[in-house]
Image 1 (cartoon, rainbow, N blue to C red):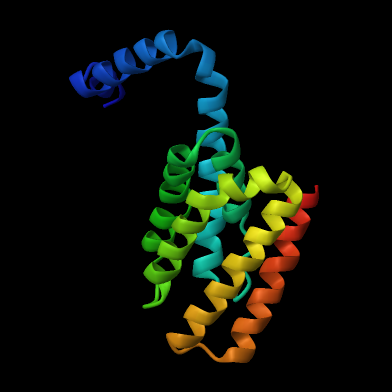
Image 2 (cartoon, rainbow, N blue to C red; image 1 turned 90 degrees about the vertical axis):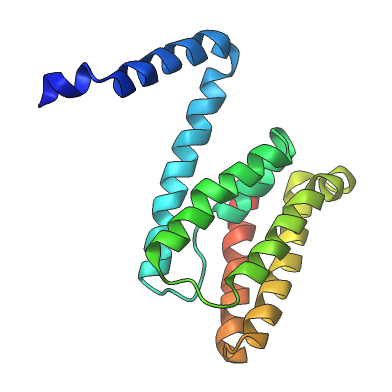
Length: 168
């Protein structure tokens, strides 16, 4: 079985693709591995967060999304959101009706985050963006049926956690 897999045309094509990409993007290889690693680790954290039904989002998705938008561009940040947040949350099967409006607000905030970070530094701008997103998240979740007290506690937890991320 093992030898058949190694000799399969799909595996060989993938291996050739990896070698070509590593030659073409040798300068960016470190950044690519960091991106893949952070996406995988954060994706696992998102999956666990959704499966355990914890009301407070402890995952660093917001922090890394702002950081990637600031350092690598919004396109890379959108890819990170797709791989580290959207796919794991959908796989968990715990997505509710308010997920997609909140995701849309999140994408808009990440899109404009580079402009905010030009006005402020990364720490202050990141905390301001976290407060803005947290407020929209709380309002949208309350509109879609979440109890206000639970959503407010989730907002406070989100702000505390992201303040910790941005100040470290």
